[in-house]
Length: 430
Image (cartoon, rainbow, N blue to C red; front, side, top):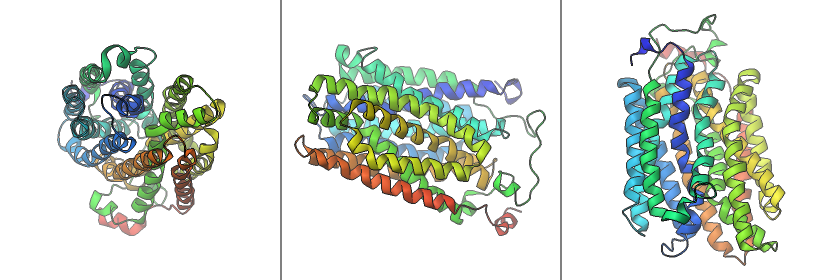
């Protein structure tokens, strides 16, 4: 399929959703952790979160490379390569037995690399097809990532009962085959628009001080990395990723500990904690991606980033106390998931706003390295203090949530000081 054969830009959205649905499997990791800390694996809480964190870091690092690849090679080829790599990682995990290092390499390094290769393609291609709706498009393009967690958690658990029926290893095998096939299908529509394309009735903004905040000036990565705006976005993204990924990685273990400590039976607590992640967090995560992107097109990226970080900071400070009550655990999971999802529509749109629509593919890869930092720090903190909690010292769970809350509030303050790139940068692009 050539560029000119794509006559309906919404087909790009369909392809993006299919791809991201599979990439979001990394957020289903918490469904595997109870099995991995038990016989025959006997991983520690820190080890389960290290696999998760390494996967997130590989995702972020490889995305920088993928951003440049999709600018040089057909985007659908890069997306297809990502799907095959992701699928291969999970397929190989079937054959490493109970080896922690084996899972670290297959799920963490290889699987994470596959996600990094494919993830940027729908965003970079989509922004070119939707320069008039960057916030909405960014949200739609990555909504499947959030909803994917719900699908894969439920298939492994209450819907498909895969872990119970075929075991962890065979579940990885089934998932790996599915990921490769579905991403290959979605990649069919990952083609750039024809040169000079613009949506009917839309004209690009003129290069002015206002246009500078709307993607009309395109900075290369070397120029972007010299700006204060890059480091502000990078810090804010670290805090947003740290909070959300911390909760994703440990919410089931935390929910079980908190509810059991409040007097609930462990089996029932496990079911409730699983629902908090698989339903409330996952659905809100997907909805938040679309909602925050749509809101930001109306009230602006700066105010949206401020509000998202502010709300996240407040709920993280109280999340430990919410965990011992089922209703409040669900509410906290939903709010955290909703705000976490907003990161993935607001930051790519903000990257396009500040540094240009045409260069967003490789520039966003650099911004996204913040996700890798947050992806290691957040889950590791959660796993470390889970081991410290040890069932009897439940209060230890409060510490990582408070750290993430304070960091998110600091990011909200940073958002208030965001300004368009200075005119001097414009001259450097000439």
